Length: 368
Image (tube, one colour):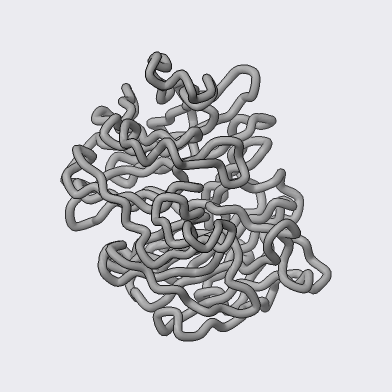
């Protein structure tokens, strides 16, 4: 099991360590980095142990930080940068060609040492071949004409928030865009195919609802032991694919199929966790009752799990990256917009609150 948890928040990066003699095993005091600064994403590269953090400093722009010694020291590293807007894109706003946020960071497998991927707002995917020393916009995706139809889902511009790298072959990368559907490359980014067939957007006119290119996928994850299985929490429902995103099947979930986050069991392709919420503009737990739902039969049924979570009324919302599961499939972490952080050691059956007073939480990640 994993013994380190990263919590990226509106006011810094908090790192919790687990100790077998502590209660409930997690040390109550976190190591704090970048206190006061919004940290939008964090990655601990499992290949070499490097920590990467993305900060959004508002007027001062997006910054990248990197540590090679488990957070004892940090260096500034290059930021993904968009090229100047060409004349041909005169109808696009200047901000559509300017980095607003790093929303996803993922490391390729051992077959591609040094390769990193970054998803950003306004919808650009970036690739690094040297561990973040440099970044290149993936023009094969950015220059596709379909991108001009993408639009923001909660932000003014579209954003890439989910990057799934096939553990069998790092050249196979599947991404999710809000709002721009699901896209996949099988050749390391040279070519791309839109793969959101079967998803329906209920916020669009009927004739456009099934258009794969305008789907608002809130979060997408992949099962490491069976990478052909992916789960997606989409704006209009929950979906599952068993054919590497070639097609998606809707799943009926209670108490709601709306939400933002999903975590997939690393060994059991039939198991995933979600955090339901009221749609569309309310965005609080259904009936002010915070629960995690779990399916263990491929989405045929969902069970609510709330032991140890706050009693109603509770108005915690969990963002896209606010739920994670470790490599064992038993340990989960969940963080909310109200700054509450919970962990479970038994697959979500019971939850323990580590802190109720953190800044609003953007992302929780175990060190894998």
